[in-house]
Length: 246
Image 1 (cartoon, one colour):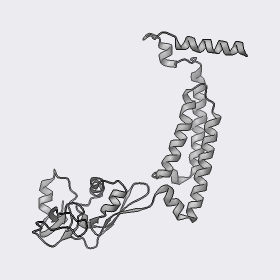
Image 2 (image 1 turned 180 degrees about the horizontal axis):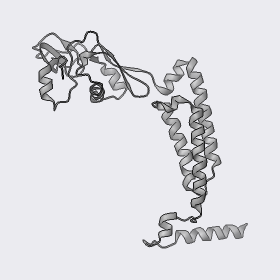
Image 3 (image 1 turned 120 degrees about the vertical axis):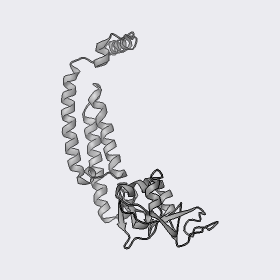
Image 4 (image 1 turned 30 degrees about the vertical axis):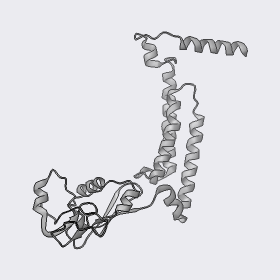
């Protein structure tokens, strides 16, 4: 045993002291393993693929949909467990199998408990967040979710909205996606169009109405010098806009 250990130590020392060379293509392509290890990599990859397919099937459709924080943590755990054995010849395939099994059991157990205990579900996956209410940004909720206003405006533009007055409710789902409930009828609101599109913004200006630059609260008043917004306390105002046909 001592002789074998001495040989392994000596071999390890030879590898570490091997001089660096740009023409050492074997080291560049295969590292310190034999070229035959590529055949084992093929086998390991096949086993890993089957393991992932089975794991994702057992995890359910929830993981295949848009990820919440809980689903992301499960996928990252599987990736971290399976990635190393694919490339390291000294790592076996049993540990990632055990890790995947534990992740599957935990996910299914928590998902089952979440159906009857909503507090547990929201604790793990977070809850729905109300970001816009009656055409006004909920500034406290934006701060709590670390969500910048421009991200909300971007999501609105992608869906074809032009200003906050068109929205009755805007929710951020646990997956990070946005859900919109339109206002019926819409009212004047703060424009969400980009500053570079001055022509469309000016076309939508509604005389006699002003919108708070920070939260989008609108008032039927044109002169707002030193007027404080009753919703967020800001004193910065701009002209409210209406929907423009494009």
